[in-house]
Length: 455
Ligand SMILES: [Zn+2]
Image (cartoon, rainbow, N blue to C red; front, top):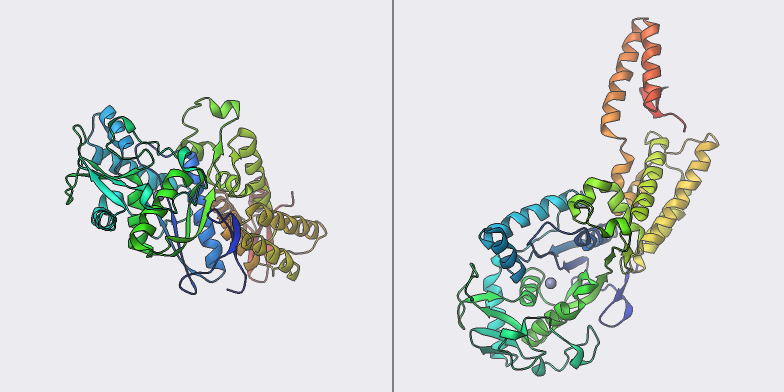
């Protein structure tokens, strides 16, 4: 933990140091999806950003707990379930499973905790009760609303005039006293098929309160990093701060880290071409490697275009890395010259998790390594290269393509057997087949080894 890690904090508008509440440990909470339909490719961005940010912190020696919630009780879920003619619980369960398998396709591991709103009802009711007791919330009908007027600090995160703060809720049927107030609990309505009992009546939680309750339940108060898409700054995160800080009189989170949105300007991507805008569709179309590369090519805070061109550029970058991985054999030692590139790479990540700057350091090494290989030097792919790629979720590029590998391995064994039997015609035929797959056999003290043919 020698490196100083700095993050652009949305709350203060400044780059601030990561100073964990518990030395050596970092707690991250990033808001996850509402599960009413297969997740959008845009939902993959916070998933990728915070999964990789966790990897970086682990590389720096921290013990990281990454929490990403799943909103499985919500108006959108009721509406979608009604339209599909299935119970909302069933739809939410199916879409949660689908979300998990789609994000599994990114092969970045799972968050450490993925709480469901429907399984956090007791802490939610307790937190709402505390807000009513402290005078920050009121009951109206069977609803409970947060009284924004009772929390003078409201608006600090999104930093906008109070009269411009529209909660975006359905005000037509709302019983709230003031337009800026927001629902903590919604009384059970005809046609909603899930509800829980609470001291102020049967109903279900609002969206914002679930995150305050889950984050406190798992990470405690004053945890280290709260993340999510920049579209959540207002009202969702503003309301999370209000709820927690009004009830507990303690800070919710130390740093607020928001990722930019995906933009669908590209003609082809804007039209609904198949299901390319869902995560599973994007994975099918471009593959996991190109998609992860696409995300790390952009700085997490910037909006990025989701375009054919951008994804093709990412696919080419993946191919360049894979080629370099094939040329630089793990059998050789890694040149010491990689050291400064490795250092630059991790310094870039320490400076507001700047993945494009880190990638630039990696490319400089790849170019240098390729120059050395062209000059006949043996360049090993060792720990330092692997650490860089692992932190970007791309260390799999160092493994040669499995299918080719197995086939090549079999051909090499057949060639060795033919040579041992002095069947040189077969041995030559196997050598030619290997060459077609891009491999040659090199005799080493450890026995014959497959190395990529020079391209
Ligand atoms: Zn949230």
